[in-house]
Length: 208
Picture (cartoon, rainbow, N blue to C red):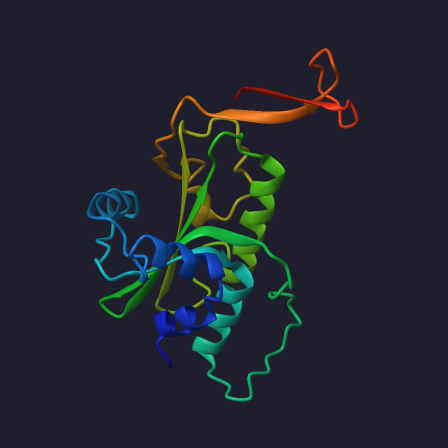
């Protein structure tokens, strides 16, 4: 079978990946030693320094890459009867992929900054990952998926009852703290009294 990491790398067409990498002098998006250590502790697997990393990585690319890895059909045509490729923009905020002892490890990171976790959004993401990897994450031999959430505080109101077992980890998903500045502000449209309104003719800047 073709190397899965190389397949995933070839699907990566995000211009922001190349822009950010070039602008920061890190074209390969290599993880920092500190973050790599923290994530390794979360998934209980040492992550190599040269792990493949990509941002906003489409789940369609994951599904197609796994299908090609399992059956390298050179025609490029695969059955989509199960609807595994959606033609949507649904993605993983950060993908980390590497091979260790003949096993491919795919780590999906989902982050929230100043907004709250949304049950509907997370249920949709969980169902999509279930379709790709199965309920126990063992749909593809020698491919182990992991899911990790990042936010300033641990999610406390998420309903994980219907999530695949490999994502929910018994109701407590993997989580890493995300450091955020506390002086950020936001802009909202409002009326002249500052009351939120989509057609009020004013805008308001406030903390949040």
